[in-house]
Image (tube, rainbow, N blue to C red; front, top):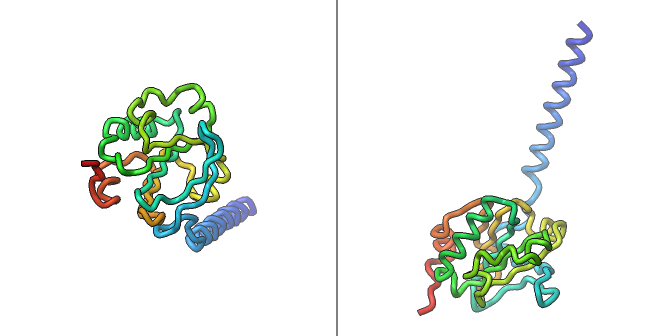
Length: 173
C-alpha cells in the first residue's frame, strides 16, 4: 500500500514539474523574433574576424549548417544548383566546426564557393545560440534590406518558399 502511494506521489511530482517547465517555456520571450534586427555576431573567415551586419542594398540569408548533417547537404546542393535565383542576395554560411572550412570540404559546391555574394564563416556555438536562439541544422534566417528578420526556417526548405518570403526572384538582368 505504501509503495502504491509512493509511486503515485512520484508520478504527480514529475507531472507537475513537466507542467511548470512547459509554462515557463511558453512565457519566455523568443530570442530572435520576426522583425528583430540582425545580431552583430562575430565570425571568422579566410580574412579574419568579420561582423554580421545589415546590407541596405541587399537582403541577407544566414544559413547555419554542419557538413555531417544530411539535411544541410541537401540545402547546400539546392543553393549551389540555383545560385542564379540569389545573385542579389547575401548568403552567409556559418558553422561551428572549423575543420569544415579548412579541409576544402565545401569545394563540392563550386557555384556558391566562388560567388561574390557568398561568405563562409566559423562562429562560436554559444555566441550563435545566444544571438540566434537556435543551433539546429540547417537553420536559415532571412533578413530584409533594413536588417530586420523577415522569416526563419529550421530544417530543409524548398528554395521557392525562401524566394517567396524575400519578395520574389532577385535575378540580375
